[in-house]
Structures are given as C-alpha cells and as structure tokens.
Length: 304
Picture 1 (tube, helix red, strand yellow):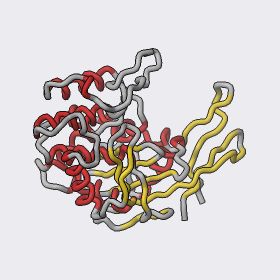
Picture 2 (cartoon, helix red, strand yellow; picture 1 turned 180 degrees about the horizontal axis):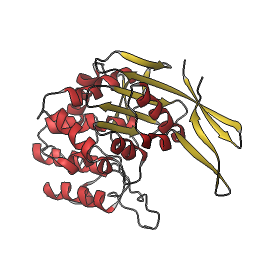
Picture 3 (cartoon, rainbow, N blue to C red; picture 1 turned 60 degrees about the vertical axis):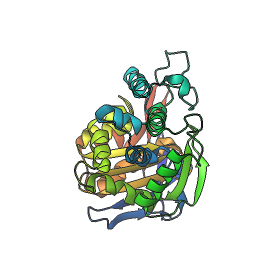
Picture 4 (tube, one colour; picture 1 turned 120 degrees about the horizontal axis):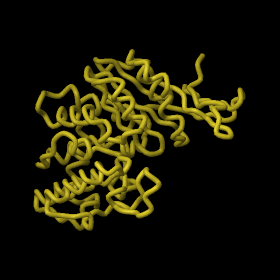
C-alpha cells in the first residue's frame, strides 16, 4: 500500500499525494515497502552519482567539491558556476560547449540566463571533460549511441542489477534510463560499501562531505546531509529521491503525481524507518503552508 501525504490547511485535509517508498537495512533486507517499488520509474537526477561513476571509470579525474558538483542538481550559486567553469577549463573548453538549456539561478535577483546556471551544468561539464580525455566527439555527447552514454548505461545496468527497460530524454537533454526503485536502492548501496579508494567510495565521500556542492546552500537535501553525517542523498525531478548511509542503509522515494512539496516529508519518514534521525529533521518532516504570509498548515505524511 502507498503512503498518503496530506496537505492540511486551516485544520482541513485539502489535498493528498500518494507516495512509494522502499528502505533497506545495512544488510540490504527490506525494512519499509510502500507501493509498487518493483515497477519502472524515471529516477531523473537521482541517477547522477551513477552517471558520474561511468565518467570516472572512463578516466575522468575529479576530486572533492568538483566531483560532488559533477553529481549535482545545483542552485546556480556563484561557487557552482565557478566550479563548472573550472571543470570545462581543465578540458580546454568554455560554456559554449555545454548543450544543457539556459536557465536562471535560484537567486531571482539575477535576470540573465546562462547554461552555467542550469542545475545540471556540473554534470554536463564533467561529461565534456570525459569526452576530451578520451578523444570522443563533444558535439554529440548527449546522443544515446555516444561512447560516453554507452559507458554510463553499462554502469547503470551493473549497479542496479537490471537491464535498462527504456531510454528517454532528461530535462537537461541527457539520456534517461528507466529502472525500478529496487534497482536504484541496490545501486546506491554500492557507493559506501565499495573498497576505500574505489570510484564508488570517492563519489560517496565527495557528496556526503560537500552537500552544498551537490545541491545548494539552502536546499533540503543539503540540510539532511548536514544533519546526518555519513548520508549521501540525491533528489530527482518529478519528486524522486534516493539516499544511502555509510553502513549501507538505503532507500528510495517517489511521489506518484510528481508533487515536489511532498518529497522531503516522505524522505524524512524513510530515514526514520531506518533509525536515522536528528533534531534538525523535525523542521523537514512537514512542509509549511502559508496563508496571507502566515503559517496555516503543512504537508505531512499521514500517521496511523
């Protein structure tokens, strides 16, 4: 049965979202299962750690903040933009090589659009750098048949333990691979449980150490990772989320109607189902609803 997320305004349940959730313990055994977690999903940007792994396996050499940025859905803050420029410059390129769409940053006082502001520019910069390193064409790096994208697909299939059922196009233009929540959860566990020094561990350590670089200074996922040291979390569009803790506890979340406002409360519930909790999570367990600028309700997971 799916979880129900209630939108409560002025004491009345105004709307509801249905949510799927899967969590597993440190040994990979299911702890909480809600909804059809074995059917196909579009994990969207939650797959960025796997995409980055495919790049590292293809020779890309990034560390620390810049490796975290390669896995990011960022807010377009100045340090994100500078980091993407640095990755491009290291490959002898500039932003004109990027094929992600132009966008505005989260800071709406900025009125000019740029591909560097687009939340996937770190990933695209890393993809281009990988192509330059291997002598692969940069003009077609987003084509599913490109050597880079084939390497990424192979990585996705290896870590999820599933054949990619279908290939689509993500919002940034990159290929998108459809798998199950079970497969994504299995894949995320590989990052902290791999040997120290492995590409998987390097990604886990970079993302968990630099949460602002994987998202943004004020983003909920950064707050979760700061509150729970040893957590790697990655959101995706249409209200997907995936996470793993250092000991292998892991989970995935999908809000069926794509309602982003319901995602973080369900992610908090997923973390708590595994005994992962901190006082800071109380503020993220429900999304505030305002009326006339005042707090009048919240979006929360229905409790029995």
